[in-house]
Image 1: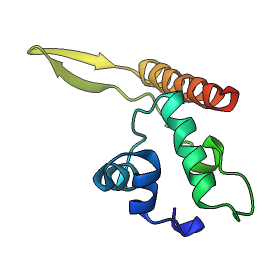
Image 2: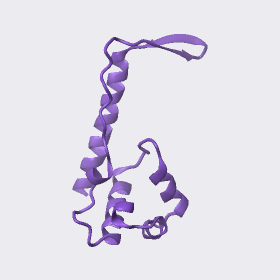
Image 3: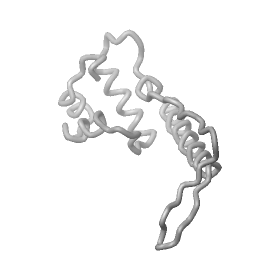
Image 4: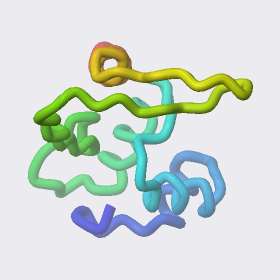
Length: 114
């Protein structure tokens, strides 16, 4: 938002949400859950508020991805679930990352096709 000189209160009014909601989204350290409809509305609102932006604001403009470094050795992390120890292997972690990546792709494609 700062890149386009858009104030949180302006975006909140445009989206018909509270300023706190915009602030929480903006200051989040992790990718919040957002459906394709909401992501599309967010991009449309940002484009209305920044008509002179050098490029159209899209989901790809909003999401920054940094790949995690690959571990050198297999890591087994002990996790306690219902008082039982379980091991989570790298395969399980990679599978979860793949699921998250696929979910992001679906959200982006839904927003682009809307």
